[in-house]
Length: 215
Image (tube, rainbow, N blue to C red; front, side, top):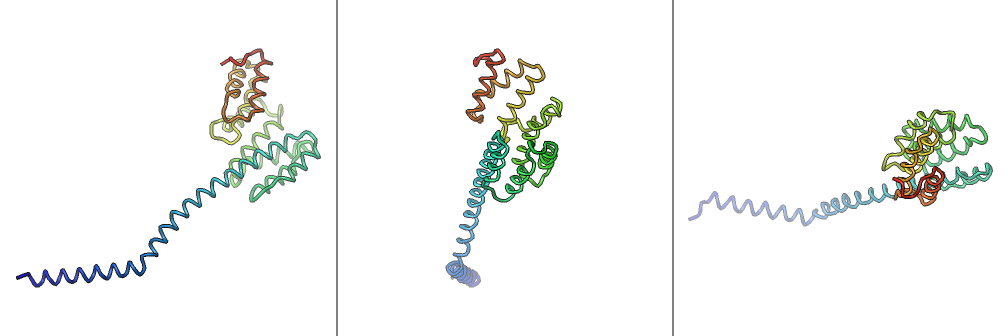
């Protein structure tokens, strides 16, 4: 004959299992929804990050293009017409208020402030530093400009090719022709460099007496 205690234990376990299954059938959808929400939320966050990064990159490219417009009035109009959101609006307004053709000293001060503001995305700080080197020119020594550009010219930074181009120009300014040729040759074949920049690099190589095969 079976042990009564064992039999009671088995019945109790069955009753407990039935209750668990009943609870799961009644409320199990909550767990399923929670899992879907977690997975969906992670995917949404990644998509949002990718979209934000793409918008930031597009804004950086657009503002650089606008700043390169030679006519002052046309340049201001191009900057004012930029499609912006969030902190981009603040940076656009800063650029509008600090056109170097109107007030060079104010422009340099404003750009330095943006570059030092850790609440501003790194992309904009890099842009401000890059622009500051171009606007300051000989007001900063070659070593000072190199110190600003060095962090911008490493792989992964948004404006790496433009910073590397400025570094090559600094080598030319310092009379370091061999170094400039090496830098320009690397830029001429850089995959992340825009076509126009690669053409400029090739033209500078020729102007320095080098050939595309150098390096």
